[in-house]
Image (cartoon, rainbow, N blue to C red; front, side, top):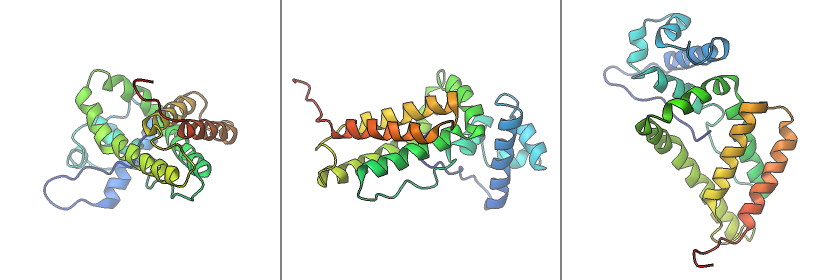
Amino acid sequence: MSAPAGTRPGPGRPRDPQLDAQLLAAARELLVSEGYQATTMAAVARKAGVVTTSIYRRWPSRRALIEDAIFGLGTSAYPEPTGDLRADLLAWTRLFLESAAHPAARSALPGLLSEYHDDHDSYRRILDRGELPTRDALRELLSGAASAGQAAPGCDADAVFELLRGATLIRALTHGTDDAGEFCEQIADALLAVASAQRKRPNQ
């Protein structure tokens, strides 16, 4: 999972935040009960008790609606730094795992990832909205930790992010939150090891 992903602004009259939340909740419920393919715009409209045009005023496509329904789960804010890098990395691991393990996310992610394979523009949009800001926030955390002597100077923040995302995503899709406590502790230790390693130069 990535960073918070707010819903898209649309033209015309001001949006109703309560209706936005109602539609996103309906999409999540359908993802859990009916699955990714059955979560259509028409189905969400029926579930929320609105007409489909109300959804299209807010989201241009089914995929856009589902993206907003799942990519903001549990990621309304990044963990606040505590001054203890290991504790901070543990908080990040828990955040990523809980977001990816949400039943709606577990239903939608395989389908979305399959569609992104043939739609690079949509995937780039997700990167710009969520992944890049998240990488920047994690890089800032590690930079502060390096200044405090808790991480290697110039540590590979991208490697930390890739390990964090990959490990939590696969774990969420295969095991959900089973044994989450032990798993998160192990991943936090692995992330700390990566952050503490000296980054090799190309000629080394």
